[in-house]
Image: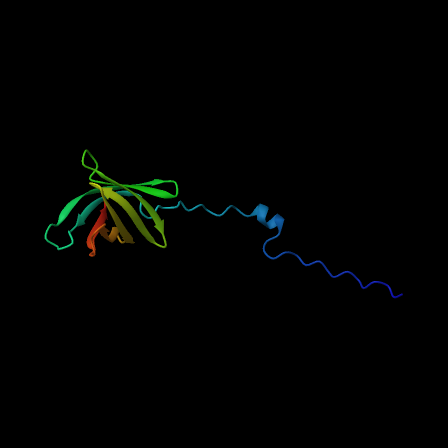
Length: 130
């Protein structure tokens, strides 16, 4: 029988060699900035636009979710948020009524809308980073 064909030449893996990698300085680490955690001044309005309001909201990262606290203090409203697809979605309970809000990061803060159970309209709410 004929002899086996010669072995295929070994190609070097793509990219720098192990020696080159060891000699190269490590790439600088860029700190990750959380896109939504922080303290904000709130400005919003009701569904009919008749009762504008202002206040404060604190957004704290809690693992993969966020704790959102409007009007910190004895009358605060708390919610749970998820940042996904470039927007923060928050569910909350206010005086026994379920609500939902969605915010999109913009220069200097977030811009959003909210609604609550039993309502068919949305209302605006903007957050300016403090």
